[in-house]
Amino acid sequence: MRGMPHLGADLILIILQFLKEHGYKEAAHVLECESGVYFDWSHLEELMLDGKWNEAEKYLSGFTQLEDNAFSMKIYFEMRKQKYLEALDSNDVPKALDILRRDLKVFEANKELFKEMTELLTLDNIRRNNKLAMYGDTQNARSAISLNWQHSHCAYPLPNPMIHTLLADHHCETPNQPVVPPADDALVDAVYIVLPNMRGMPYLGADLILIILQFLKEHGYKEAAHELEYESGVYFDWSHLEELMLEGKWNEAEKYLSGFTQLEDNAFSMKIYFEMRKQK
Image (tube, rainbow, N blue to C red; front, side):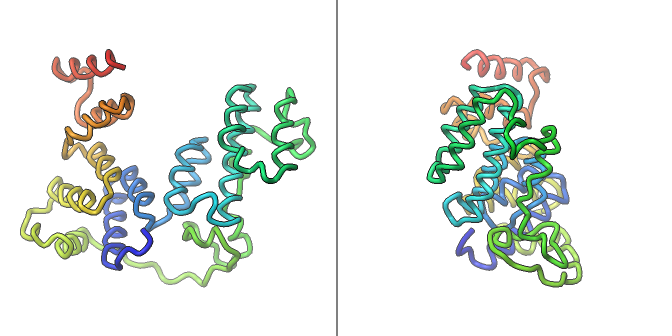
């Protein structure tokens, strides 16, 4: 988060490490995106390789916007172009047309490029375009996207580069010695500094998760908090489920509920799932 006090940023980093070490990876990635404190290149790369383009773009937007600079624009373009090519390659013309109009239209200032993208709609095989003659299968095409191009000339390329290094020409510095990761107690000590009223509270297992949840909600990281609630099953936020239902976000509501109870668990669970699906 731009302008975040050092203590806050340091605490977020400690929480991120704790979440990942304890298996709450999705909550960690949501917090990364919400706070903008740490950019996980490997996570973005994994989303792209899985073809989860909307999720990849949402994650990236936590750190840089399309219009921020030329490098940001190139990253967004490459991701949207690949999504477009995949739709064309699978003969899903309606989807490709939607991507062209909704996602690629922002690049129409480059008339030649936008025209070239549009003309691909007329081909029965995108490989008939000279520039795409060597286009392989979907997985190889995704692997070929090199958003990490700025690191190609580095003597010591970083496996998880900071987001700003992807957006400007640079050379990575000689890597430092590995930092010994902090123990769980470091997280507790740091949380007590920010939430002194929690001092003395037991912090084993679920109790520490509750402390983290309170910190996240008090500092505005609500999506990360709800994801952690779902992943850990430690705290059920009825008001959040109610909000999702009132907004008609039935799939998200059911996903959240599944972190605490499954449809077949008991008659009450079955009734809740039935009412939600019936309303949908």
